Image 1 (cartoon, rainbow, N blue to C red):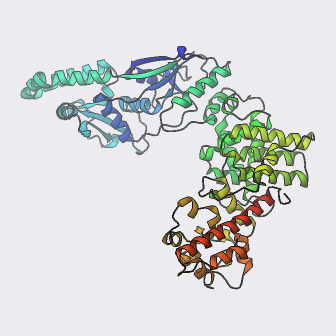
Image 2: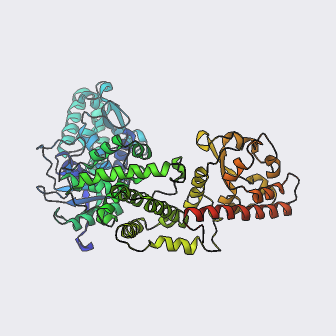
Image 3: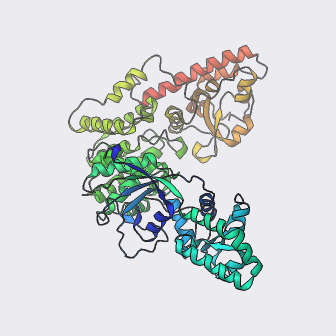
Length: 591
């Protein structure tokens, strides 16, 4: 498919609605559900009546007997046959076309924010006298029409049902009925209708029915040519303007449907079976892109590059079994992440995960360990691989290529006596170097930042005042040198104040007692730092004697120059202690 094959056009949107109503325009089944509320439907009608731009549409022309994606009817359609055989698939424009289909055909279906079917009307008088008034379009529950479903009531109130807008003949019939009714019931109003209203009303409705919408129509592609299908998916992802991001998981759902593989059903079965997957994803494939993460895991175990263009072409043969294995692998990876201690990665709460990019490779490699019954050495190398990636922040970009590279290098090393993966040499060169620093990490966007908090958990860090494990408390991400205290002494740069070397985890209760106190003051307060614990409570927080000495130099009456010197000393000593632990978990302790 070349750019020359893509046809820009303008078309009457009512014609497209009619196509959808008859089942000749359908949706690919990867599209999400119709989600617009009644006010969104009404606002679209108002925009067309006023002649406003309502966005463009993206269509894919197709062979009715051999659509490239499994087609489904739009909500409210009344097709002539039971089987969908579309002339075009709607790639972008579902919400708008379904809204118009609903308003113009009045199906007995509810909208997102209403359990009772709604009926939409145009107030013809307001439409001419004050088109900017939102009351030009209104809706009424089907059970509360109070005669508005009868032509006589509509004529008396000069209210046009939107169900007459789809076909020109329906409006003309309604208008002629109004003419006859006024002639027989209100001669004065009939004259006014003839003189003032008939022409403008007809012009407004004709304008609605002839309203043109820009669209792009992609040429017909064959399902037997997966590269063409993949290009269609890529175009759709790039041009989609609905505000609901569709991933390769959604697109693959449609491709596999033709092979009787129901990806949504496989997902639901997986979250039912695996409690951690259900918890981390909240039961939804789109949460943190877990549906895509599973496909990446599956692809890695098939020996395939987990990039989108490869995922969209995953072969259906054996897919269901491979998916179930990927789900089990993901569950075990999440178990490893959550485990607190040297054997795990200390992610005791989801917010502390140092990014989701590593998950597929971690899941696939963990599965290789278990399937092949590998021993202690390989398992230690997996942990080393994980921590090296965290503190190198390798998976902050290029996730797919790094996943494939690392998976290949690790399995080659384990099963075919290949060399150590390149990530270990990179960690030695960077993390093992004298100039390695973590001070620049000052937010959750950094894997290093979250990784240090996970190390705190693995070291058994406890709350300073309560002496309890962090997992038992509502936690606060605490500045060791309080932010206000530093600001009051002229230290205001956010990266310097919020650096990970000045952060630790304590309970909300303990943090509330510290507030803005000087480090020397709260460190000496046995109601804040338990005197019974001593080193046992502070060392796991990377607060050794050298760091505490710097804290004791920062008192409530210390001059700014003294605070600045104490803070510099503190950051240097605490960073050194954290880096020693980082090097240990990365297998660089002896470097």
